[in-house]
Every structure is written in C-alpha cells, then in structure tokens.
Image (cartoon, rainbow, N blue to C red):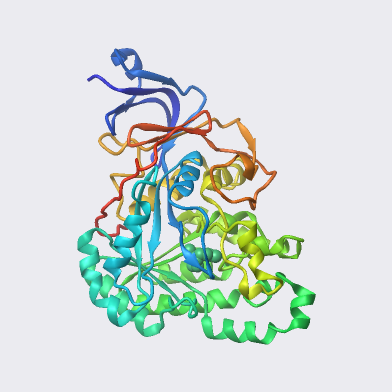
Length: 465
Ligand code: URP
Ligand code: ZN
Ligand code: ZN
C-alpha cells in the first residue's frame, strides 16, 4: 500500500495503552498503525519523525460556544479564531450548542449555526441542539436526531436569556431521549434559590465590599448539587440518558457516583478550569475576568474532580470555551451580575490536562486520551469515525513533545482573547503538529490550516462508554 504520510516511531497512545509504532495516513484516513511501515512503504510518502513524541487521536472538545450572543454581547472567538485555537491545542473536533434565537425552531437554529461555521471552521464540528421552548422544540427532537443531531441541551438557569427549562421540560426531554436513543445535556444550577441569593446580595454596599467575589458567594455548592440531584431523579424515573455539563463541585461528583451505582444512565463532564483554578481568583484586581457559570470553586472541589476522573464518574474533560475580551468583561462596572460569563479554553485544554494531570501524576497519558479524545467521541455519537487511531478512521492526529514547555501568552495565541486565565503558566502538551482528516493544520506549534476546511459531522445515536 502506498501511503501519503507516515508518522514514524512515535509513542502511540490510545485507550488500549501505549507502544512505539508508525501511523500511516492515506487521503483523509488512517491506513495502518504498526511497526516498520516507514521502511516497507515509504516510496513517495512524507515521513514525519515522531521519535520521543506522543502520537494521540485529535482531542474532541464537546462543549464550546463560538460567536454566541450572550450576556448582552457576543462571545469573541468566532468559528475561525476558535477553531484555529483548537487546532493549536491539538483539538480536531468541536461541538457547539445551537441555541434558537427568540421563538425560532430547532431546525432554524441548526441552519443558523451551520451558516456561522461554514467557510470559517478549520476543524470538524457539530452541534448539540438547545431546547429553550419546550412545547415548540419537544416535538422537533425526532427530526433533529434523523438530521444527525442526537444530543440536546437544556439550561436550568438563564431565564433572562430566554433559555431556561423547567422540570416539565427536563422530564419531557428525557422521556423523548429514551424513545429516540438520544441524550440530554443539562446545565445544572438551581435557579430560584440562586436568584434569591443574588437578590439578597445585590446592594451597593456589598458590591463595593466584595466586588467579583459575590459571584462565588451567591453560588454555594448546593446550587449545583440540588440541580444535579433533581435532574438525576428525572433521568432515573424516565430512563432517559443524562449528561451533566461543566460539573464543578465535589458534591456533584458524589451524586453522580451514587446515581450510577443505582443504575441511573447518567454521565458527567468537567472542564479544565475547574481542575486547576479556584475562587480565590475573584479577589484579584482583574478577578471579574474569571467569571463563568458555574463559577470556579474551591481546591477541595478540584481534588474531588481529579479523583472522579480517575475512578470514572467524570468521563470527559471539555472547556466550555466562551471567550470575552477585557473590553467585554468591563461591561460589569462593579456589578457582578453584569459580567459576560465565560472564558477562553480551547487552546489550552490538552496542555492543562497534560501538565497539571499527567506530569503532576494525577492521571496517565492513557487516561488523558480517554477523557479528551475517546470518551467524548463515544458519548457524543462520533465513534468510531473520531476519537481513536484505528485503521479506517479519520486521520485526526495530534503530536506532542513531552518535554517542550511553552509559556502561555495570549499575545502569541490564536484565540482573540486579550487575556488568558493561564497567562504566564509554563505548560507542556501544546500540539507540535496537528492533522485534521489527513491534512496538517499545525506545524512547529503554528497554525498552518485553511479556513473552511472543517466539515459538519452528522452523528449517529449518542453512545455509551
Ligand atoms: O460561563 C459560561 N459557561 N458561559 C457559557 C454558557 C454556559 O452556561 O455554558
Ligand atoms: Zn452552562
Ligand atoms: Zn457552556
């Protein structure tokens, strides 16, 4: 067999373990993984020496918000800068959330999101469909699954955005998921008590005294825990598959273990920021920059989430990338309820997990591949096309030099954020090279891809682990 590219002699890491091997690419697919491929069939192939480097499946970030109208502005990374950032971080597929504007249908939201991504995306992508008007969107779920969108999202907060779902909507969506073989993703925060805590603290005196710290003060862990508990109950009685997005608390992880032990079909992701940042940051001069929903929690929560990744109750690491520039963040003017919520993350997902997880001895390289590449593909119905290095699958590949550290500096990154939560951190794990369907899109840590190369991916039914 004549190959186009052979990645030679790297340490190939998959969920099955790691070994020294060559990876051969033909067209857009992985053609072979084995030893001696370069020697036997190098005629005409481009040989890439990967000795001493990790070769892993491209990471999949299942939780991003590119160009999202939110909090009175629009998230600043669009489908171009966001996916360039992804590529540089070794991410080769993103899943965004198509959220209907006003009373639009799910199908219209789907078309809107496809329009936004087309000609801009540099890596492959797909969408979770956000159900914001239950009576209108519930009946559309079957059509969306047939179209290739088998994952739905409901928010338990964000009433003012017009996105909030009540228990009836969550219960009904889970019933439909059970029937359709789909999965419901939930943003779990308890809105009524949260609103009450916000109202109690929303005084000029407290805002002057506590500033951005009020974001954490008004969201104690029980705000997330109660909402997860309730959503889990609806999953338990309906039998619908539930996936808790951006889980940030130790309490949440405890609820998930317990529910899974009872046989509830529930999964949870966390995000890189909840593993490495804590709420002492809100007291800094620029503390408001770090505001996201749910907010970063305490070191004890970080510890529990790392443990949950190891034992399995947390199955995916994503980013919830929702970038806002300093100017956008400045809209808060001292009132924490007006901060645009979210932060950049795509470019640093794998480096954070590698440096703070693998190098710090909190997880193995195989587990990194599980949580950032293979589990996301399996959970979201992208496997086996994505998430592995198996013969015949898309040649989405990331090469990492385990020794190469780069100091994070937003000025040298692809994201258009003019700040980084990790500014100045020395991180290893950036992609030295990234391949998207056989095409090299990062070389020597620089983006070399093409706008519009990314394709929308129709998906099969949501999978299981
Ligand atoms: O702060 C965040 N997470 N912004 C994006 C919206 C969401 O809740 O995921
Ligand atoms: Zn959310
Ligand atoms: Zn989100």
